[in-house]
Length: 183
Image 1 (cartoon, one colour):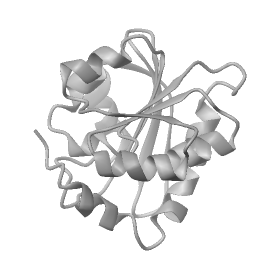
Image 2 (tube, rainbow, N blue to C red):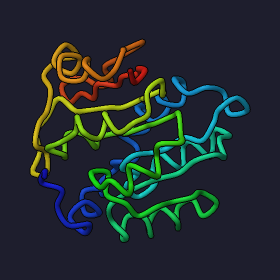
Image 3 (cartoon, one colour):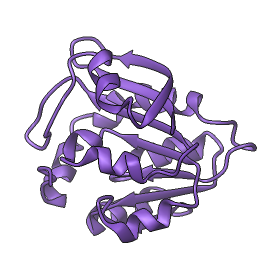
């Protein structure tokens, strides 16, 4: 298990303009998604307080499920985007993994670095699914890992994902954004 922290600790981390700093990442993710009228349900693994949800709905997507382990985070998400569907669930739990087995589009932004068994979570995603995820190049109190380069990310996840595209967002403090297919 990773250093997930208590929900209030994460909520405290969302102060001081974090939404504005993450907006370029969220807009890049939307570019990787199928067009809204062509997209199946987007499953957001580790949706937090719904910041990405807000961007997705403003971009015209309406088929969406956000999953997070924290009832507090889900409550904040529901307030932010009431029309979205949210589920309280631990991504490491088999019951939560059973929920996702019928979907084909997955997003996980700034989540995998918090979870020791991140590879098990990727492995639970159905084969031939679109997977879009980001991880940082910096450590933090709640991170169990970080990556110094895109190559390090590819080495960690290439046994489970065939990468189509990737970009680095930011200078100094970076986020590596990847698009791939689960195989």
